[in-house]
Length: 267
Ligand SMILES: [Zn+2]
Ligand SMILES: [Zn+2]
Image (cartoon, rainbow, N blue to C red; front, top):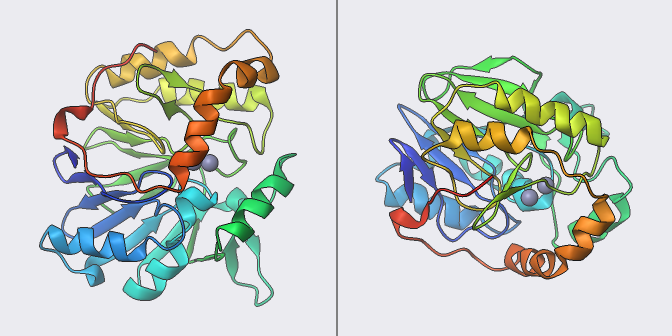
């Protein structure tokens, strides 16, 4: 599915969304669950491009549903894996390794899921920080947005006016919502949302759910300006069915959708 010129959501990936940016070279944002490398490669070929053209694999955060196939894709394409400095740990050979579940009270749950999902930790070639830039797809700026995890990052392509927020915001069918906080306090999450609300963009792409291609800036700003008033456990209890469906969807491939599937949601 082409969301904006050159911005594609990769079809049939399990877990979080994977986005392919097709410019002079190729850039991948997130990879979905483990075992998805072949799907990404066949999507690249379906655009008439070659896997060797993949230059960067940008990881919004280290959860298995986003970084699951990063190690395999790095091996198969030679692309450089990029992640935020707070999302990596130093491995035994002093190289950086994407940390699947390094922080937060939900760490044991993530550890178990990572083991069940056969998540292979991924070496990181380029460690970035807030405001760093990379010369891909017309120029990209890192926006550090901790909250969901400590090293969560959003990616702003200023010239193309496209923003990728990973799991800083979840896009549901009819509204935006806050993700589970795995690694930072709530105030930090809200500060990250306020930071996103200051940015200038036309299209917003999320780690889960449909992108916003119209009124995106206004929707994000209004969402950030309205923090929840009830405690987390109450909100989780109210959304238990939605959460159960979310877990089921993580393990099943998302099939191609018609281009008009993206629609405006209320914030
Ligand atoms: Zn996710
Ligand atoms: Zn996540």
